[in-house]
Picture 1 (cartoon, one colour):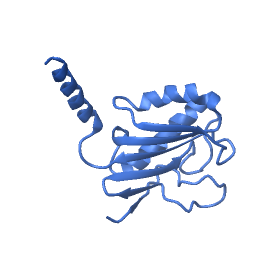
Picture 2: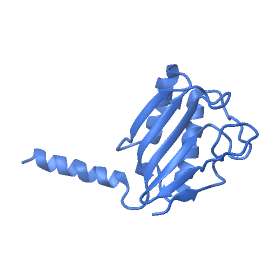
Picture 3: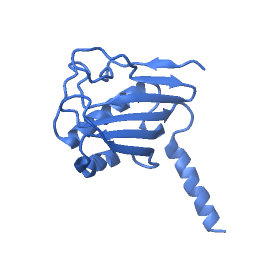
Picture 4: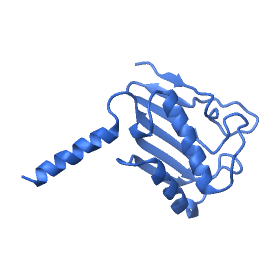
Amino acid sequence: MKPEVVYTKAAPRTGFSEGMESPIAQGVKCGDFVFVSGQGPLDPVTKQVLSDDISEQTRITLDNVVRVLEAAGTSLGNVVKVGVFLRDMADFDAFNRVFREYFKGVQPARTTVEAAAPRKGVNVEIDAIAAVGGERRRGASRAVKRSKKSKRSK
């Protein structure tokens, strides 16, 4: 299987170096998965940081992740792994509250680390891995719940 670059004008070109075009893809589809490069709280056109508030930065960043996933033909419901890079772990609770708004049902596996900002003003960066095609996880999670119920009733 050959990797395929995923690109959308609806999300910023990945890369945080001001004045320099990114040398990496927004995402890469390979087989049944898409790998989304780290997204941040940037405007897709101006590439400017849109807020200094961690909750708003998290929403903007996750919206950018969603746009890349949609360009690849999938959605947040199929995300299996997320990597989160926070500039300050003191922001963890506020970040987590917003993250919960986006990921309902089966939660993806996740790693969260404190890291230096890739660019001044960027307080969160998020990458993701998602399944492409097939059944959405929500349906699969209902099947798992039914299976667990039937085992309990035996």
